[in-house]
Length: 184
Image (tube, rainbow, N blue to C red; front, side):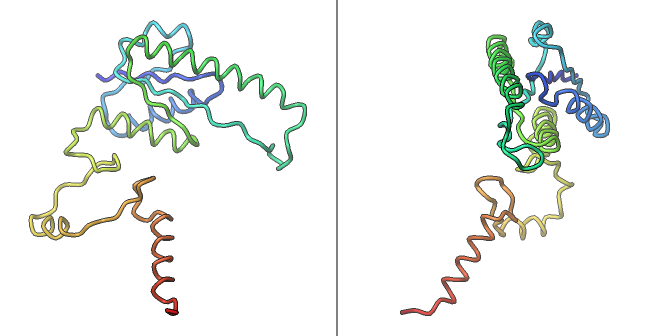
């Protein structure tokens, strides 16, 4: 059984991510337990974990929901952000001292869930059964199809590994422009 700890500063979405992770792990049939220990009381349980998933601190918004600049009511938010920063540094220090490997998760709730699942999958699924993007690879195609596929090179963005990335689309558009431009 693989033990994963989900840790993070207060108000970083740890509880909702834990619920999503547990549902996804159950659906995949993986033998993984996910715990979200309270901090700092749960620090004693960390050495038994194979991986800790640390909720990253996203940057504070520069506008409120209405699109307006923050007002004096944002002072409390700044104090909370400072407290989160202190808690985050404390958690990282404890993880490092306990020699527990950890992965920091940033982004929206969906992005964090996808990153967490990919991190867990790297621990439980053999490398030969994973694609470069961390998703399960379907069964191997027949030998003829493998030979054809092996000769075709697929471009992937160096920033996100997505073959349909806007970086590639932009590069293609620029190349087309250069080809159609009249020569002087």
